[in-house]
Length: 328
Image (cartoon, rainbow, N blue to C red; front, side, top):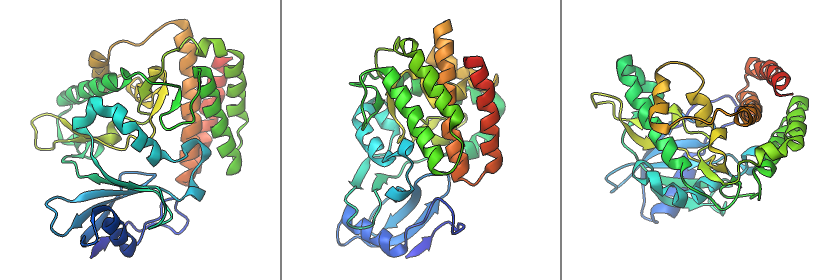
C-alpha cells in the first residue's frame, strides 16, 4: 500500500491511523476481498482524520473519515460523526451535493474510534482555488452559498439541540446547555470559563427573548467556504460538493456559523444575502445575535487551544469582554 499520512507533532490533537487499520476498515466496509492500493491523508480538516483511499477493482476512490478517540472529545463536540450520520435524512434538500455514506461503524471492533466511508466527490476545496478566479466572479460563489444555507434552514425539526441529541423542548434550554458544555470543556483544559458562565446567567435571566424562537430549523453549525468543493475548470466558481456536515443543530437559523461568517465583512460575500434573504433586524434579534456570538467565541477558544494557538485563545477573552459589556 502507498500510505501517506500527515506528519504531526506527537502532542497534536489529530492522530493518524495506521496502514493496517485502513486495510482492516476497508475490508469491513467493502468486503473481505478489498485490497487498499493507496491511502493519502487530506489536510483540510482540523477535527477528524480524512483519507482518500484507492481500492483495487473500484473505479473511483472513497473517502475514509476517522473521528477522534472518545477520550479526546469535548463535551460540546460529543460524537460529531454520529450527529452527521443522523443528519443525512434531513439534508435531502442538498443531497445531490453531498457524499453518499457507504459504511459507518460505531462498534469500535476494528479500531477504537468511530469511522465512516463515503463516496468521493469531484471538485477542489474552495479556500484553495477560489482565488484562481477573478474577484468579479466571487459573488456568484457566495450567491450559491446563500442558496444552500437558505434551503438547509428551511428544514423544520422535531426538537431543539443537536440532530442526534440531546434534545430540548425550548430554544433557551438548548442555548444554555450548549454554553454550559463549553464552560465545562474550558474548565477541563485549565482555561478560565468565567466569561462564558456570565453569558449563561444572562441567557437564563432573559430566556423569554430566546424563546421567541419557537420553531426548530436545521442549521449546519459549520457551513462556510471550507466545507465547499468547487469545479476548478468552470468559467466561474461553481459549487459541486458540500462536506463535513457534522455539527448540525436544530436551532434558530440566525445562530448558525454561516450567518456569522456571511455578515463578517462587507466584501463579495454580501452577495450571499441576495439568495438567502434579509435578516431579522429587530432589537430582540440583535440581542440574541450577541448571545450567539458569545457561543461562537467560546467554541473558537476551545478550537484555538486544541490547535496550540495561545495567541488566538487570548484574543477570544478580549473579544468576549467587549461583547459582555454590550450584552449587559
